[in-house]
Length: 238
Image (cartoon, rainbow, N blue to C red; front, side, top):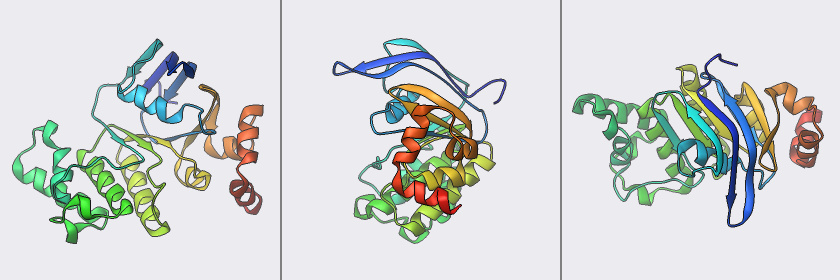
């Protein structure tokens, strides 16, 4: 764990619609590498990302982030009615880049996700998987210090998933801290350096990914991991 984490949550609680979602959640995320956030439905994973990004304000507790740029990729792509290139360039506006650099970053990002030939196509004509690749291209072009990912490959086929995973690894290798929410435990095993297990709005276990996935220490983590039948088969074959 870095001495100065990029994310520090301390005793964060949040109730939505009368239902407790986060319960005195304390969490630190390293300033480099990929951290996965896993757990059962309703554990508070996506809400945690929104609290970190400032989209939701906790009832109690504190949220501290290291200075720097951040990008958030939602499970459902957030795009405007414009071309693919315009959607990527949109994320670069706050960076106040020269026109040439903005164009170069846009072109490189589209190439990286295999969408160069569709740069002028309307984003609304893209399939769901293509739209998610486009959103990842926009995040990659921004070169963020922190990247928040909420099930980024949930709607993608295996080939597109591999492309996105390669992009995530590349971004992390370039120095971006990544916090990934995923139900795909094979993906977590492939990508994450550390993994945090949420249960009922609390972080019940964290550690190196292989230790958490294959040798969970807590009853909550064991219950979640053994309940994921495809993952159980995968683990047995590993």
